Amino acid sequence: MDSLADNRLVAGLPAIDRRRFIGDCEFVDLRFGQDLGRALSPMRHVYFPLTAIISQFSGTRPKAMLEVGLIGYEGMCGATAMLGPRLQPFGLLVQGEGSSLRMGTDGFLLKLLSMPALDRSLRRYLLSNVLQLGQATVCTRYHAVEPRLARWLLMMSDRARAPALRLTHKFLSDMLGVRREGVTEAAAALQERGLIHYSRGRIELLDRAGLERAACDCYAADIATYRRVMRVGRQDAI
Ligand SMILES: [Zn+2]
Image: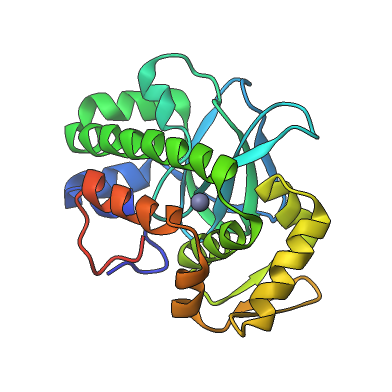
């Protein structure tokens, strides 16, 4: 089981590696809306969220950006540094405030050389990320706003490990890459079905099983991909 203080990738390391790794990380508190770097900017740090949630954005222009990943305690930001170039492949924005482990990119790459278990686990993680990016493309092209919103709320709730989220329609519209009116309609429809309740920037998930049925297949597909590639058990939510 995860404790609120564990990042799953770090928690899965052999005990001696885990202690060494955490000892060389900084603990940082990330604020809601904090910008952690633009796409294609130099990658100075890698992040292993504990309670924080970080959005990965593709695109560099404000009106042509789309969220392509949501990273919480199950993952990390910066795994592509393993491939060589130290460039942020995506923009990073803090979506859920909370704590994270952080390490300088150079130090992280050195760690990989001395910790083969970490190296193996992060190679798997990178593959699961690539597969999920493919799924995100399918989702954006083929799925309607309402099931995409249901999927996104479930993903946020899984990573927040909480049934209530602080969100605005403007923010959701940026995340899903759709007009704000489209988000308002989809949220109203989910509320009408008794699946969520929203007011003043707070959304509560009232019926998780119902929301899973309302979500597009991408929600279950992402979880299956993560479990298969990372070899985690069925008892884990993500
Ligand atoms: Zn979808």
